[in-house]
Length: 300
Image 1 (cartoon, helix red, strand yellow):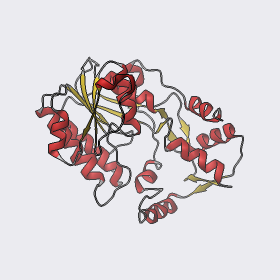
Image 2: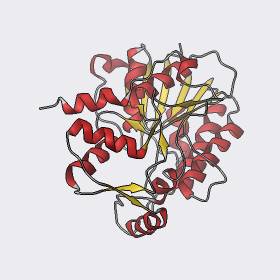
Image 3: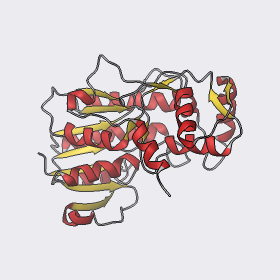
């Protein structure tokens, strides 16, 4: 087991779980984030080390990697701003981290991406994720790339949004006819996969696609949420060109509730490629989305 690991994006939705998974395995973790993390790691306070690092700042990246045996890139940007673009974070930043890790003598790099990442996509977000994978491969050929499907879990955006739509709207809109297939995966299972990938003896450069135990259409997911909430709502098909227009309008807002990347991801199935290794190869039995739905419905 590598005993000193730097987790970039260690304060994010996935990053926090990765840090917890590594701490539980006795690892000393540098929690690297643009704003120095607050907290003490609980019972593992002596192995929880906050550091300030920004993938766009080469010096801070090198400093965060100093002395590390392994590194994880869990940085994710869903909404662009004047200060951060998909390219600067997912492509240039990912490549910068991979290059610095190689120069620092880090012996294992795990890069988190996403199912559907495609360097040839017309979507700026999806293209950046795909180009980011290529940049990582170029500078750290032995990197392990993990591509999860849409993630759910406590304080997520995905399932929380579906529940809010059903609770608040008299009619729930669908992306297209709602037939896009998703394979929702629990964030803690993805975090466990990262921790295991850091010690796996697989061939260098292995890529894993991580999906939950069920493949469900977007329509079926909404119907399941309605069943758990005991509420029925009409489901309204909305053509993708209308979603494109709405996303373009939302981009004018400081914190857009919808982006072109989200719409683009919903145009195509987001399920693991059976021809690539997944959770099974890592010895993980992923939790179904039902477990999280039951947990939320049981809350007072």
